[in-house]
Image (tube, rainbow, N blue to C red; front, side, top):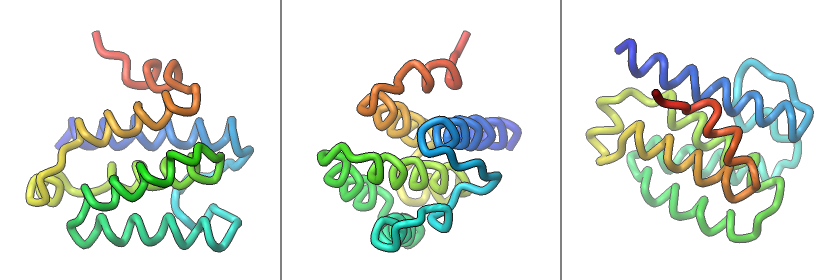
Length: 127
């Protein structure tokens, strides 16, 4: 339980830092509601809804397709998506064949794609 809480805090802090630095949005809660563009917000909501219905891999594949466009809006969608995934109960993740390690890897990959790999390495530094 402690490890899950620590992981969630790391992801939340990393995403909040990225959102603040890149988008100049200061928020305690990372959610689609912080996204101003209605279409972008709806896309993020759809991905989250898909993952909450248990289709996490499908949602991640859809996100991957979006990220091929390499826009800042898609970066914000990805950050929101991985932040929400990190909040899911470990039992739910296990039930749907997903893990916190996959969330971490996905978030790191997303940040690397946008030239922010060092930021992810700083937050996920392991001894």
